[in-house]
Length: 282
Length: 305
Picture (cartoon, each protein chain N blue to C red):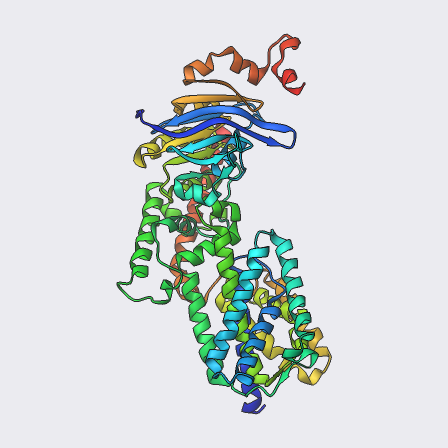
């Protein structure tokens, strides 16, 4: 089920240089509402760098990133100053993410992990917690927060593990918890950085179903980075292929699968002369 | 031991606890180590002492004034240093603590190296109890709110906290300011108990002592900080008959503690948890058992494949 909608995220000529190295060069794509959008490419293609640019962890060298029409990051250009929203601000606007190497609040329970991230659903002040009387804004909002956290755990099938310290969870459930935590902020766009890393085929399969169902249940748009081609081809509406920081191709899974350019980027060609890897190194 | 003597130690526990509670918020809950809290304590002590001894202010407003002064200095320090990562922040606080002491030593208005004497004797067991109760309840209220949870998230993983929409700089600032206010009030209590203060009382050794108490009691536990304060304040007094050996035993006690319980006496557990825990623990154990059996099942499948 694909819902066509407006642009959620738009990258315009996005460029990021680390010293003399161009990690991402002139990448342009847009993601439409309700879409599951895949970002693939061989190792070092700049996928995670793009995530970090969207999140505001890195500042852009050039180009522009828009979220629902609002600029969240822009490199200095044409006399205009560079603009970069802080990562927490971007998260609050509705872009949340998971990490390639899971970053949970390790020593806290499953419940606390989600409860912490629910904080945006309350707005009581710094000194309001001092007064813990029934009917105060603090008590009401705190109750709502806890309810939301429990609900989210229920939805994600984690309720049973509520009191387990998160580091003790098996890998698959840690991934799930990280997604639950990202959902706690009620995001509009969810970024998944290699969600299937280290999963076996069955786990990957259930992850695919989960990604689809959270997209529908939470009315989300999803951007996935993944090496697992089964997952990417099975779940994405459109795919953008990167190679050495440059856009290679964009299209539906079918188009991408049959593109000689993509196959070359991943596997190289048999005649050594036109090998994509060598070209990039020069 | 006479009651007078014990009362003295309890009052000492009281003002130490105020500083330790503040440090517990910063180190135990936010994950920022500070070796300059004696500096905040000195600012609180001097401002409160001058307020009563020179300007004739009543005791409680003077205490508050000392706390606020320390908090303001904390805000200034934070805006300069909180962008520093881990160890670098720690070194900055160390420098801050020493700087405060040296400024006081060379400032004639506050008595230079001789310090201030003739401070009215105001700190008694009641005032210490009031301050500590208010301090503990206030800290508990903060920790058990969205603000406190955001602060704990910073300790656990700062990047993940940011990605969860938490303004980490703001919350680190809040923790540092509150922490400084607590230390300042602790300093004010000290000044009005000793009736004299001098810069030498606020050396780096003091800062380390408070950090040791927080770690000894267990990071991320208010209960631990209170118990740690009581034990580590009473211990040197009880061992007074052993003269210089008492410091050796103090050090040994801390080392043994760290070996037996690396997470400190209470390590992230509060007194209330001990009563609440059984049901939670049972649920957690049940879930962990299920996980184990599931892993067993998975392994079986792997063998079949």
